[in-house]
Image: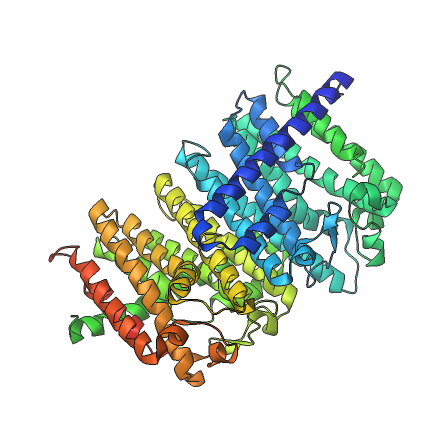
Length: 310
Length: 310
């Protein structure tokens, strides 16, 4: 189990990495805007900045940065790749919030992009954020080795596409429209695509940037898959328990929509037990990295994901 | 000037390359669907196939394939890259057609994706097509050299993003909402982003895949920029002349919306003169490749773009 020292280190790192990610996002969105400066699609740039610079825990960038750091790799390129992943995550929030999708007005305590701007601008801002994510992954400034850039790009596309996030969102919409509720296995599969794939990518990309060996990469992939599921179960528990002020978005939405979640199929206690098992599994995966590995921050992250209040 | 023999060769090639592109799109969308098979986001797959396999001239893939072929390079990887570009083009059509954007019901003579399916599915299908485009560019099957894959990916992202297609679409929406009509220079700039960037990318990617030298790449970039503008002027002329049956979509939309186009600022005759100047410029750019270059098909393409009826 992580010590309280590890947890303090974790919290410091989480804040530091979020600040580094924020600064990089600001820089990337500034550069992208400058490249189109003479043409001034000013409203689109403002919408992209609203979507990407509005805060958040920056958990995915954090996982990438800290996984690479475990292998002694920390540099601007890693932060660029991490910010690229966050751009893609932000695109998914913008599109998920659209009236035709989840129809949400509030995100991170602020109006969603289609509320702050308009629907067309929100669609385009999501498109441009998604595109910029791949721009960042493929750019030489992210890594000197083109094999690594192409690998990161391909894995990100797989995590985000039909077999990952977009496919999971489609299944989620289909489930809401269907009569029969999903089984536990179906929910786990859906969420592994919708939410898990990007979290797993964050860890795997960190291992690639850290040039981890095959055994370490396998252990970290197991860790990434497990915390991805834990993240979603914690999310379902938070929604069921409902503290809107802490969440910065509407709570109780799942029950309102009669949506199948980990809580609806396992019950609140069952979901909490599964969450605690997953945290133990995450620690076991990290054990496989060997006693000399600096796993403190990733261990604390698994605990944090299970215990977070927003 | 191209001979009638060149033009016959052009028409044969256009049909052959469209068939090769169609087969590759079918394969790519089959593979992507299989990767998510166990999860079956069947409606999303169907929407992506509706968007990508519904025909069209496949002009962008054609330009890429033929430019590479000029340098003796023709293989499956080139067709993959060409199909990747077409996936991205198809995403842009799906999102542009959405109710919040251009609100079109008809595309290539068939219902648009949000009409044939629903709005949420159309948004997601566009997202997944865009993501798959980058998947294809970055995948080892497209080219053995990762430098080339990363370069294609980066250039495609730049052509599609804020400084390219998405930015151009945002400017177009802003122009429709504005009081003052755009000037000729503003329309040219907007269209170079919205339409021109992907056409230019098609030619540049072909030159990269053909491993053209710097001088040839510069000449081809000039050609690509010129035919991109020609393509849009021809489009505006077709919309103004309005033959819905031939177009497979509604005509006269621009005037209806009081939209500034090349025709509205230059007049129909002025637009035709500019188009003919651009075709001459395209031929001059190809002259720079030297007398031994096999420029027949690209010369015929410039003529075709200016003279097409749909």
